[in-house]
Amino acid sequence: MDLGIAGKWALVCGASKGLGYGCASALAQEGVNLVINARNPEALQAAAQRLQSLAPQVKVLAVAADITTGQGRDAVLSAPGGPGVDFDILVTNAGGPPPGDFRDWDRDAWIKAVDANMLTPIELIKATVDGMAARGFGRIVNITSSAVKAPIDILGLSNGARSGLTGFVAGLARSGIAARGVTVNNLLPGKFDTDRLRTTFTAAAGKTGKSVDDVRGAQQALVPARRFGTPEEFGAICAFLCSVHAGYMTGQNILPDGGLYAGTF
Ligand SMILES: NC(=O)c1ccc[n+]([C@@H]2O[C@H](COP(=O)([O-])OP(=O)(O)OC[C@H]3O[C@@H](n4cnc5c(N)ncnc54)[C@H](OP(=O)(O)O)[C@@H]3O)[C@@H](O)[C@H]2O)c1
Image 1: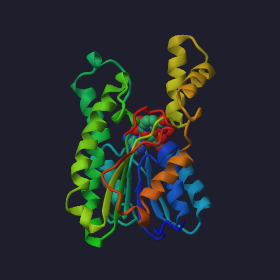
Image 2: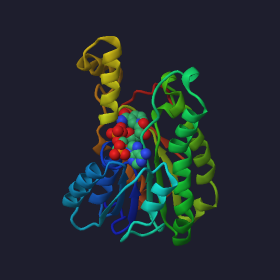
Image 3: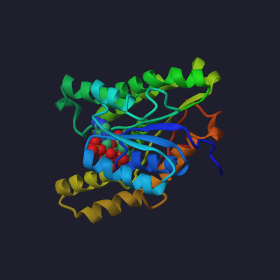
């Protein structure tokens, strides 16, 4: 299927590895020009080179910056050679907040989580959405978490901050932009095989005295698909949401999780 988005410009945040890279890679293979972002410049540059060799016909610009800061957002939105704020596609993403007990979190911990996982996507949307609407085409995909639908107790910072974003998006998606060709959807990853997931296994192994392989096996056994998802699978869903074919789908929370969420809806 031709997704119909070749030649468009996408900003993909948190894209040097993991789910963000999966999205960038799927979009590049559809002929989409990219501005990719992450903090570590070497890892980001290496990712840009991989993307460029996957899709030599597209432009790939790498902007190393912390997307949760105003300065970082300004840098990606004014990347030399990029489209400025005139992106056709926006994929918001940043690291998730740390796990813990809410009794230990002070105001600063909450502000940091809300900044990274709620206000940063909203700021990026604010900078780009009206241009999309004026041009009659826009696709916004926020990478959130299955924890929005099925909260995980130790991830209270994530449950809270991402639910705030989800509520905001539900309203925005159904506002005037819907009639002007702009969709806004959230992708809620279940368990995907990325560095972040592997780090949580190592931490759990350290706490319980089990081996990392045992922790991994036990987690995998909980998933009806009996495996974790891959960044490529995640990227393919993201690219479809960004396609011309997904124009009638907005304000949705899509949960790729191998069947882990046990509800009918
Ligand atoms: N993997 C899963 O199973 C899973 C499940 C539920 C939710 N999620 C959520 O999905 C998101 C992506 O997860 P992932 O598994 O792909 O993580 P990952 O493999 O650790 O990759 C995270 C990416 O984001 C970048 N990043 C992190 N903080 C950033 C910042 N402040 N500014 C710019 N770039 C930043 C990282 O590069 P730098 O470190 O160099 O900046 C990296 O490129 C996270 O929010 C995570 O909580 C993941």
